[in-house]
Length: 224
Ligand code: HEM
Image (cartoon, rainbow, N blue to C red; front, top):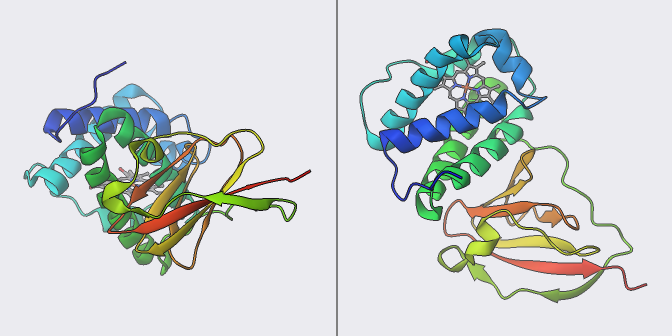
């Protein structure tokens, strides 16, 4: 187990980038898109890892090593499914939290969402999409709710991967701002006042406030 970085540095970003792409290379949705451009061997991946570490050092630390054009680079790729952004963000958010403490991880996750959103608009003409939200079966009955959480006061446990008990569904209801809701390493959804998040029983998930978001979690179970 590697210690988590308390602050963002070139080293912490390199670590994040290495972990992130190790996971991307194992992902059945994303790996084919990357391997078609970059290749499959570690030797072929080294320059990409270097390039992306420099990109993040520029974005977060203002360093000058990267002078590419990410929007153009993605326009040049063979077309891919826009829903892959949801997967990309889920892996990134998990990896940011695995390598960094909560505060720096949040900085990285927020930045990743805003760049991904810009790319999605540029490539597909729409802001980030995600797969269909899990459904809340009609047999489920509301039984309680958390207090209202404000961004600064969200319990750490909700901001790191955790799960609801067997048989318990959750519904994340945002009353202000935007929340990133990440399910496993597969999906990240942007929750707003118009888009509630459904938590399935025992599914690993976490939330990341993207601004001064406020929300409650309602709990549901089958009364029978
Ligand atoms: C579904 C989402 C994405 C896919 C499938 C994807 C795929 C790729 C691929 C295949 C390359 C390599 C291009 C090449 O060298 O031939 C690349 C490069 C890159 N990606 Fe992504 N990407 C995604 C999202 C993102 C996001 C959200 C960011 C930033 C937060 C990002 C940052 C970059 C950068 C900086 C490069 C290097 C561009 C250059 O050559 O200068 N990508 N991406």
